Image (cartoon, rainbow, N blue to C red; front, side, top):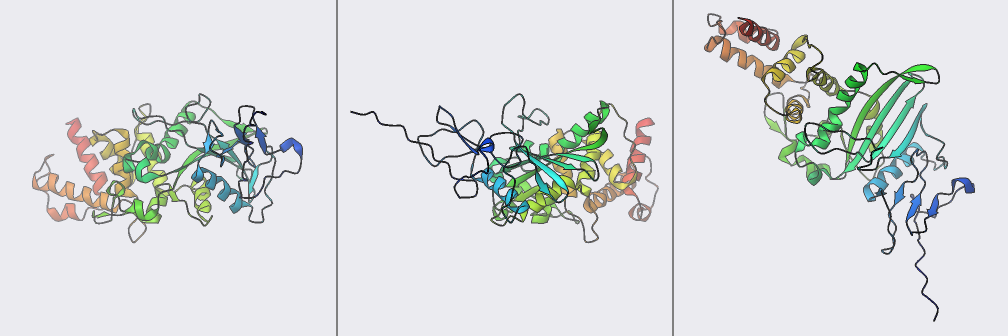
Length: 369
């Protein structure tokens, strides 16, 4: 009786069609003797990207793509190449206007993989590296993207290590690189090197916005659910059937916001090798928070995000934080005379143009006295 032949692996294409390739050297489908399936992806410097097979008796690994990760790769390519004329070679980058994009699968718990860590948390291994080369500005952006269900996958909300690693740790790494004097040179020229990340939420906006762990404070200090724009400022983009969300991902990787500036200053504050001299209300509030905090670094960042994520009607961030400092200055300096300034009129404090700076100066004077 003839032996039963093992099932032949069948791999659907990334775009739902059969796989094809213009030349055999870049054949996108490789079947290993063990039965695993490896699929080359356009513009990927890590080969292969692994798609999940539709057969139960075939194993794929390590690093196979789940449906949301697969959708991100497909959406990225579709957004960049709506006519379907994307490159097929792993030696050819994806193009975004005049910029080049190289896509890399970042495998979890590999020594050679990219990872971030804050406090004593677990290591965060984002799913993809999206390396963007801008020859006009000579800027390399080491971007990372992680499609993830955040309803369950980010249990700590804004203080969750995956979110803090995405929002804050790139600024810490950049400071460490600058302190070491490392420069990035490419083709004989010095380039600017940036690290930025984005979380692509596979959980819907409706489900995430109702969770208290993501609440923020508005300009009056009232607890509020974040809008999609708030989440975007927090580097969270929602995966949708429309590929337009890819524009938000690429924008976040290449353009910084006022929130990013705030987090960069926070990284400077926690850098024990430097001395931070605040300038302006925002920086003085940060310095006060740093002096007062008994939290972990993650909790510090989360508290900052809650107060600064949403701008007021004039587009200013941190309105509530400054109002709160004014109240603190009024209560501690006028009512209690905490640092010996009890003889002042309440109106002098209430109308002070820079309450954060004034409070910081008085605290420093008290410490010296």
